[in-house]
Structure formats: C-alpha cells, structure tokens
Image 1 (cartoon, rainbow, N blue to C red):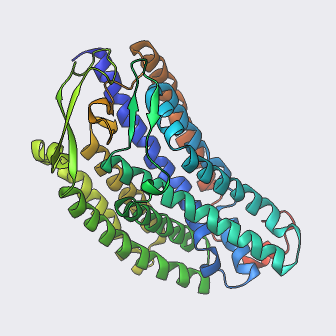
Image 2 (cartoon, helix red, strand yellow):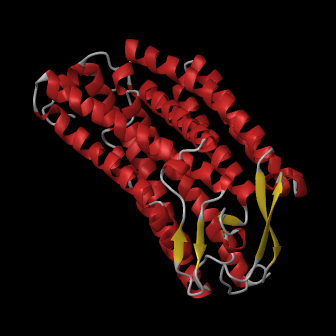
Length: 377
C-alpha cells in the first residue's frame, strides 16, 4: 500500500484516539458540572465536588487543543468547512465553555449564596451544552451536512442552525450527555464519601441505563438511514480533491463496513460492554473500575461512529459527490509524516502527565479540609 494512504489511515486512527481522550477526560469534568446541584445539596458538598476535579479540569483542555490541532493540520479541508459552516454552533460552544473557568475561579470568591448559585448554574450550562453539541455533531455526520464547493474549493454552507437540531442529532447529543454524566458520577464516587457518594452512585446507574437504551435506539435508527458510499474516485493514497469522485446514497450503507468485515462488530460490542459492566461496577461500589469502563464505553461509541462512517469525515447532503473523506481532505504526505513524528513524542507525554497528575491527586476529598483551605475552589 502507498505510504501516503498508510499515513492517512494512521491520522484517521489518531483523530479517533484524540476524540476518545477528549470525550473521556473533558466529559468527566463537564459531567461533574452537570450533576453539581444534584450531588451537592449544600455549599460545602458542591465545593467538594468541584475540588475533586479541581486539579485536573484545566489540564484536560489539552485534549481540545490536540484535537483541534490535529484536524487543522491533518485534515485542513474538514477544519475550514466545518468551522465556517458551524459558525453559530462554534460560538455557542465557545461561550458556554468560557463560563467554566470563570465558574471554577470565581464561585468561592464571595460568600453570598446568590453569587454562588449563579456560578453553580453557569457550571451546569458549561457542562450540559458542550456535551450535547459534541454528540449532535456526530449525529449530523450520519445525516450529512448541507455544504458544497465551488471550482476553487471555496465551501458554502446552505443549512441553518435549527436544522442541526434534528431528532437524530438530539438523540446522539443525549447519548453523549448520558456518558458524560456517567463519567462525572464515577469521578465523584472516587473522591466523595457518604451521602454524596450514594447520590453519585445512583446517577451513575441511571445514566448507564440511559446510555445503553440510547445507543441501541441509535443503532436501529442508523440501520434504516440512507448512507453514503463512494461509487467512483481516484482511490486511497492519491492526491485528490472533493471534485473528483462520485458518491451514492443508499439505505443501510452505514453498515457496509461491518457487513464486509464482521470482526468490526467487536467495536459496538465494546461500547455496550462498557456501559453494562459499568452499571454493574457502580452497583457493586467499584468506582475506579466503573470509571475505566466508562472510558471503554466512549471508545466503543466513538469507534462505532468512525467505523460506520469510514472513509467519510464530513458527508455532504446537498452535493454528495463533494463529500469529504480521509482521502480527499488530508494534508500532504510530508505534512502527515512530520506531524506523526511530533505526535509520537507529545501524545505519550500528555498521557504520562495526565496519569501522574491523577496518581498524585488520588484519594478522597474531605469537607473539613475544603472549608479551612482558602485556596480551595
């Protein structure tokens, strides 16, 4: 196989790894923000929840930077088309996420209950909205995004913001939210005690059940959906543009990769296994195991989406022939090769540092220590 095609395939896999890391790590602290007012019934309990993720939430943003940088450099056409077409969505995501650091840093600066309640709701919004948007983005990929190119590859988005909030996208958004709530609940279980622990355990079990149901419904829905398939094109590893292919839409096409390679059914099974075993682990009070099983669930869910869509990255519903794939949207072979070299150095460093930080900050967060620590959130 051509070296260029191998590099394109590797960066498709690396993009999946970065998305799984983002969903797991960022989804964890966003999940804590979403459930903050439920697991914490008073100010001290909410401060305990915030300080459980306090040492990690800002470091987790590295996954956003890695993911955005990978798309920008490895698949520049995806970056340009998606960021211009989803401009309103990106602004919504940006403004909701700006509230997160403000909520963490400003909440405990004043003792007034009204002041702290405002930031509690800000943290809820900044956890709830981004995870729904994250899942809805995947849902819209399956339906196709209304965009097209001119002869000079200038893209034009022809849809509307409300069209992105279609029923299937909302279902995917709720699935993403459920997994985020599950990860946040498992995280609180790891760091809290007594009543907070029990509330988080209850939420972990409910969110795991919701995720299982939503993932199953989504699979049935996708099976009856019209999918995309490349009928003719330059093929893998050949420099090309989106103007050089023919794409068809047929029912059940999103299951073509699974039907052609039955071993790939292991991927969605990993998703279901992570959710089901996570439900059992939370019930058995094995919170650390439950957290890792949540990461496995994210791997299965995002892996299933990527496997079904392959080789498409951004299908076009208005002009299917101009859909973006890993073959026609990637950077040059030299760029991908250089980037791979940097990734082999920095991704392991990020994983090592993240693991070290969690190891150092392990253990329960005590309420009395939070109250007496002026530097605590």
